[in-house]
Image (cartoon, rainbow, N blue to C red):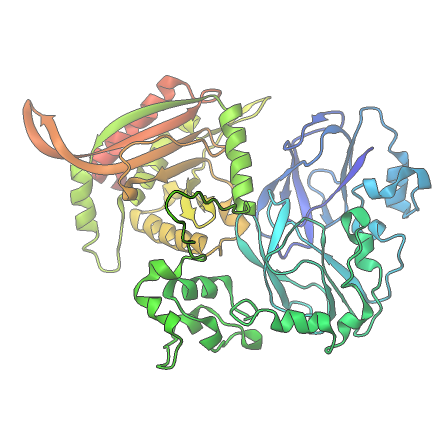
Length: 540
């Protein structure tokens, strides 16, 4: 049966989107994961992926046109399928025929509740799609509780996507009548997140109508709006530690790293919310609990579970649920390694001059440049000379980018994110250093916005700080190449016929053979080595 695709909400503030480009046309075969169109939001132009397979039967918003979120974007179904009923239904708001089983059609949200009348002023809030790759979301923290008054623009919750933890803003005013996804729980995009409306409104049956599979949720009762009901008491008292404390993700992470109990911190944010500065300025009192003694050992404070005692000779295993981020990493890297024919080129670079230059640069006040910053700068300049490496494969054409946006792989607790330095070739070494430090710090605290992780044309992954001397990486598609950077090693080298002590570093370029040939990759590495071995040439 045909599926209606609506204009997605690709950012937390997006209310309308513009179709910049259609990458498919009516009649084309669509596979799950194909990019349908490029959609311009209020923050960036992002690729919109299809979650359905079939034939593109209809385009509802032409390229260059703007439409509100949830407007009819496209219809996908079987080739030759009659979609006249769907088109007339969206244009005239007609009721689908009984035999059409409307629950199977991914129709706009208004049609999902056709069987239950929604009282005036009541709004059903669904799990938003906060990034172009997001299919499920996890509620990290609720910033409001059932019974609270909500104003338009208030932050309802912090939602963890596959890329970041983001604050979700309410576009409606009223009373929070119902919470559909509890803290720590995950749910697909468009699942019921909350219901907002006038205080005391009967919302019986609304959440069940929206829930997939028609499962009854006993919590949906009018009593939910009463402060004295057991449901609310549970929400307020079930967690006596940090879980019901209003704090930003960054504040929670800093407190976790420092071993600070958030219940002892006074918040200065909205409604007493704890923010970064509150934790950084916090001084523990002498009566603090004994657990605060772990502040001298941050690595202990970051452990969320205690290892069980396992007697010798006995086996023990634990199962850790996959986070949204880990699932997406697995999917994307599997797609890359199995679809892009990888080959690898490795060179060894003399880093003696780079070490001298870095030491000199870092004598400048307020300047801190790392070797990784120098590698990024050298890559950016080399890509300008070898644009074929700065390319992207598609079945019909190879796109060669003449702008340089370098993704920097950053390890975080749940996996890996790749913030992007836009126009890295136009940045100085110190600008690259400052930007990398900023995005890496915010990546580890899940404060990056989706737009900051989009649009890379090349990626750099560095494990040298862990003592890894050489490794290979999987290409971060749609890039055509990724550079793996190893540690600088002091060892004997031959120079001018003499054995001397030198400092070398191995780098490996993984290339997509569909776009980059061996000679092209080798020439890029030659240019890269020239820049790194003669850093003054990067200042020209």
